[in-house]
Amino acid sequence: MANVSSEALGTEPIGKLLVKQAVPASIGILVMSLNILVDTIFVGNWIGPIAIAAINVVLPVSFFIAALGMAIGIGGASIISRALGSNQKEKALLTFGNQISLTLLVTISMVILGLLYVDTLIPAFGGKGAIFDLAKIYYVIVLYGVPFLALCMMGNAVIRAEGKPKYAMTAMIIPSIGNLVLDYLFIYVLDWGMHGAAWATTAGYLLCFGYVFYFFLSPNSELKINFQHFKLNGSVLKEIGSLGFVTLARQAVTSITYLLMNNILFNLGGEPLVAVYAIIGRMLMFALFPVFGVTQGFLPIAGFNYGAEKYDRVKKTIITAIKYAALVATLVFVILTVFPKEIAQLFLSDRPDLDEQALAINAYVLEHIPLAMRLVFLATPIIALQLIGAAYFQAIGKAVPALILTLTRQGIFFIPLILMLPSIYGELGVWMSFSIADVLATIVTGIYLYKEVKRTLH
Image (cartoon, rainbow, N blue to C red):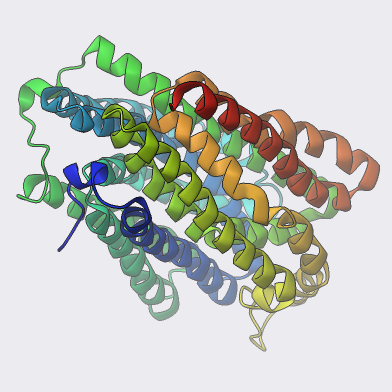
């Protein structure tokens, strides 16, 4: 499998290099997003719309624990990219070993706490009424597999830091395909219902872990660690933590956002409105996959060249990444605003045996989704600057501005908006909050990025 070597990150033409990094990352994110999307379609068609809402309630908890692995992975990957760029191989190895130890320690502890407080957490995240029982089934089973997912997310970031994007892509594709196949078997063939959906998801995590474990044992990986590298090192942990906290904070705020949104929408419109948000939430994950792919491809290139003090290449990487991401974001915007009802219809069952409640929810979703989708994605064409700008500070190891810019959209702008606007405009206020927050966060990020580039890259 041909890949970009870590040395090539500092020599190949930026445009060509970014495509090599971003396309596999985009494909991997696409397949993972398709997995979530099709999984939701299967659940909606074979179990019912309440089941979609139930999964949406569970996502904040499982995503937050998995995000611990992602945070440790991205924080450590930034160190590894810069260490490889400056020929500090031992620091890269020590960082990777500490990432593994820290991921296991933190995520297993969080899973234990998550299981102990299951009956408190689910209602807190909007799992009320008819949603609770299905959400609890899904939550408990999926939580068992979350440490494996965390290890996968951590390992995936490290694989990209080595300049091996195609292996990182494969690591994302394998569990997604496995999950969809098992969805069909467990839900449709064996009729396990919500249990089947949960076990299919957990099995997908295990498949991913198996592949990532194989990669690091194979000759394809440059990072061959031994037992001494697993011993926790204070200075390495501090650097991983400061950079990884940026990703963790973003995911924590995302979980808080889900909590608030599910509760606000439940109070405004009950289970049907939560189902509308569940579909929009899936599209937020799925539709922006190429933008996230460009961002993931950008990180190791910027980090390596910054470590090698090749500042002209860093500047060119920033500009090229923003251009590529803005182009694909605009295409996404056009598709979502032209075909919102057709997209929503994919998630809804047309079985003749649906009960009155399911039929009423389906009709409600189709009525409310077009305006909601258009308002939520209205500012999509400009988010490239926001994402690349925040990622740049993380890539070069500057944790404080990375944290500030990461939190501007959801923490500083979006959460206050959804707490204020619905009391004035009702449901409309919820959907308006998304684009207003995007515009404000993009302005702030643009100012930060411009000042940093002018000050340091010369």
